Length: 458
Image (cartoon, rainbow, N blue to C red):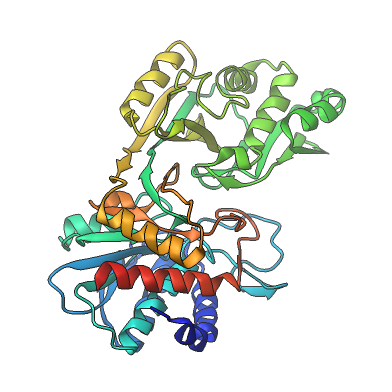
């Protein structure tokens, strides 16, 4: 159907609503009464639900874990799964990430791509279909979570504790076009080493992001060696080293480039740069042991080969290995790891392989969190319908469904795929500083999601 006139009529409201939602800081916070993931996610969820209610939809809030917005009377339900929480912002933004601005045609702000912008676009697509009174054969339900970027407690509560029935088919606008029919397994865990003394080492702010900065305190006697090694380390690891001498030692700050953990090759890992710098000093004690382990079993290897987890398959390619955080807590050095596991292997396969490799090292594997891969048949109604929509709207007739390393809500239920929102050639700044959305692309998003909802629900 031709929705162009309706899209233009709503364009200004869409941008305004995206900006208002982005202006709500909604990283996971300390739980409070009635706010299981903190004030920010609860406030963001309530904004979306209020917006849907004002549009005339039926709205329900499930104790600020999740909510849904729906219309239609069909026996079957089309689900659209989105989330209102975001990852931390980091430093170096072109604007305040919670005060979104349009600069040279790009709307900057945390969440404009992941996932607040796509969420708002899908909600307005539902509004247009309702306002035009286009008959649909299925109920359409926009499901909004608040804990997607961490452990998905929102969806566990919504589906497993409140027992809301699964939609019959669904998509989530939280990856890339044309469509992701399969997603690698996600395995996150900690590699921990007990400490015999006091050290200061920190870096990264989320296990599912390539860390942009890392900081380590070194003995004052290391300054000359650091200066001698600086150029070679920066060249080999692509990061920047800054040193500040103080009474307690040398404060080394390493700067890299953030990226999503599913695509670690797109970033520069500051923790790796810091570990390489420490290793070049040949220190004794805890720092030296940690750096020796890191460079032997991890280093610049992004496929898990060095640590014994170099799995790959023809369907989905190689495992990815990302060190997202390093912290010192309770007399332990902790490396937070994110692996994306090929679809023909289980996360347990990887756990066993890593445990075997590190068995005789000072490190142990703890606090494993795993969600195995998903695979929706490429010839299913869901996949073929959405691929047809994508090809007709974009003219990209040679497009094929893809496998992704990302972890989306498609895993929460049967018969769900990731459909967008990033278009081919659109800069992917999810989880990075200066997350930005080209305003002109909102029109294409609206066309795609309007047609997708109509074709799946008619």
